[in-house]
Length: 112
Image 1 (cartoon, helix red, strand yellow):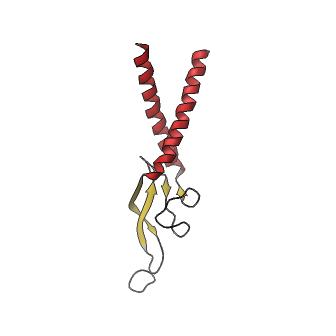
Image 2 (tube, helix red, strand yellow):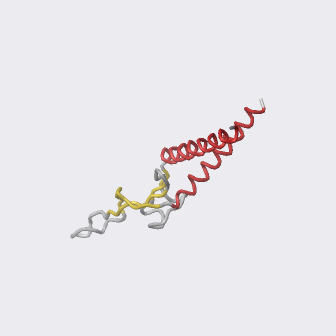
Image 3 (cartoon, rainbow, N blue to C red):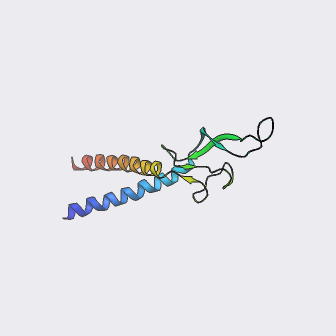
C-alpha cells in the first residue's frame, strides 16, 4: 500500500512539473510558416488582405498562436491569443513521459 501511494504521489509531482514546463515553454517562440491575416489594406488597390507569418509559442508543439486584430501584434498572451488545446495536451504528455522515464531511471540506479 505504501509503495502504491509513493508511486501515485510521484506521478502527481511529475504531472505538476510537466504542466509547469509546458507553460514555461510558451517563451520559446517561432514565426511561420502559417500565415494570418493582419488587415485589409494591402495590394495595388489597397483592398486586399494583408498576410504575415504567425507568431507561435510552445515547445516542441506550438500551442499558442498570435490572434490578429485582438491582441498586441507579435506578443503572446494566454487570454488574448488562440490556444490550441490538443497541442497543449501533447506537450504535457511528452514532458510527462520524459520526466517519468528520468524518474524510473533514477529509481533503478538507486535500487542496484
